[in-house]
Length: 373
Image (tube, rainbow, N blue to C red; front, side, top):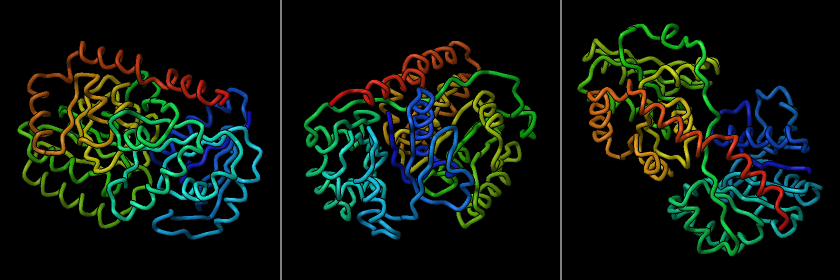
């Protein structure tokens, strides 16, 4: 089978969409399929074949609402003249999907759409965009949503006349090996460890995480922000200033920004932390939440995407868009010593392994990919 995944960015660009599409691409490649990814051209991509997945670049930027830069016709002709058995479009509101939508009737292979939440659905500038999508959506043979609480599911329930498949996001198991995160990075060794793992930008809400910890009654904490290719821009220095004033008031705490640490150290951070704190403003279904579960740890964060839907299933963890509520809940968890509760850790890991292990989820994708429509 010849498969094409279409996504705005791909490795070495780092993000949830990139990671998810890489997992899908390498899984189907390992099953013996010829798997390609079409994506944006980026300067630091050294190899056009990664783990047996061919990467096809187009120097295009933008979307249907903001407009495009680049040779859009070449991409559309590539899709029309392709000989793939299956083309999968990952996320709306970006050029690999939006340009395809214009000529979707001319694209002959089986087509799957993974919409990823429709983050701009309530934006007036996108009203015409979604009206057009209503007219085009039934050109896809399958649509896969990450849950039933997101805008995309409600939109599709009204406009897509075929079955909507639900596959939650997930993570692989995080095995406990020889841990080195605390030993390597923590200076105040007796402190409770809080982590945040995300790209460094305003929408990921590292500033909100600082507001959450600033008002904690429990003062002995070490907070680690972990990111990749962090740019020392205005937002970065704003965080440094905010952290400086928090530490000036609370000499018991430490706050550190870690850039480009190894995968081994990141996995160790999950295993060795006490709580994961997420302050994101926009998410669909954050992979870091499922990675937190895989490590048996408690996740607290903002009420974005399908976080509340998932946490309701688990019964442990917390989300709110009132930051003081997250602070109070974290203080409560700490007072009850829940981070040392081995029964809770075991429950969270079982919950993950039954529902959100990629080894289970990928089999669901396989079934849909191979279906004859």
